[in-house]
Length: 518
Image 1 (cartoon, helix red, strand yellow):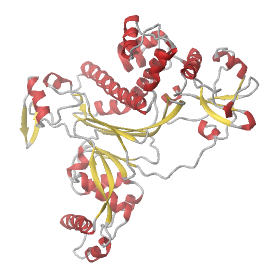
Image 2 (image 1 turned 90 degrees about the horizontal axis):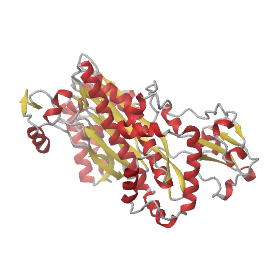
Image 3 (image 1 turned 90 degrees about the vertical axis):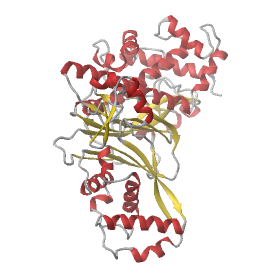
Image 4 (image 1 turned 180 degrees about the vertical axis):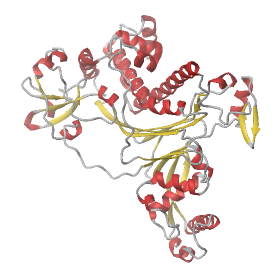
């Protein structure tokens, strides 16, 4: 087990950096009382400002939107697969690369979906930061929580304030994979709660009637979690090797569906089925991660009716009070009293397998003309370039989300469509040098006097202009900063300032050794 004294060194290091970059007790109390909105809005927390970050997407994340046959576009899509967050682990601080994929399907205006898509990452990272901060504070016994609440936190772990190191080392058991995943899950739930609270306040002030669905996926440590509000969907397309008989049935089904839609001629591809399926076939099958929140679902209907609302079909669509087609939503202020809630339904963390090929998150407009299995069929055809497929647009070979959106639109979807597609079987990246991991990328490092750092000199006196060695995928991520450290024999490593730099032999640091500040 990782020694508790080493953990204390890590935490003490964290306190050193927080003297320059950490949160004040006032800011921590604001977070406790009002969550993300209170922190972002308060002048007492100057480091936390909403960014004007652009909407550029990583190349491995395919996104597309189509206004369809509606007058306005109310859908929004967000995807960032490059959110790097440091978590305490059994052997020190470790990087966890978190992916976030989200679709927001607005209704009665785009105000709710627009706000949710812009605030989610900001709020999510803020909650992650503060939850980790409170974890370190708890370990030190210097929590900013009121005495009563802090004592309750200790009691949760069967500890008291006089507990010795051996007793407190019991807390190390939480620093495993489940600790990281639970922090991320709690941050997601708190972010959704705060977004709904923020929008509800704005809607009340401006008399807005809009609302939005929210389907949000987290990817971390080869695990996936889905949170859903409303009727957007998330699904996995997973490879399954079918027997010759099942493979032939699959191809016949795809062939018949395309003929029905007039996408292929009678003769195209049919004669090759026997040859193609003689040894079986690896096909993509759908695994749905979410369930729609329609008002006629038994549990949803019961909640609505208990709150005094009713479910009535309008033009064949069940609606809350005959108006709203979803029973959960962010916003929709006038329906809150009738049992419409913003609490997400969670499909908890599950391990991704080697067969999971694609993640798809989309608004319901995609599924007006495509079933969930149709989506996987189309991705399979694009991947395999099979002879039975129709003449897919050239765009399908490199823009998967556009391919799905354009296909749904051409087959009759009338609603707005927003879609994100993530290929899960990405090629393995080649090992990076320490400079690349730290984001140095050939830039001149800022050399800092290590003696000042080791002696506990405040970092603000070491440098008044820290060098940003990499441009993170989002400005808020600069809260999680790192150092490039030169060790003996020319070895370099990338560390967080609150990490114990001396427990690894290869990175023994001497006062004269330079370090680079990110």
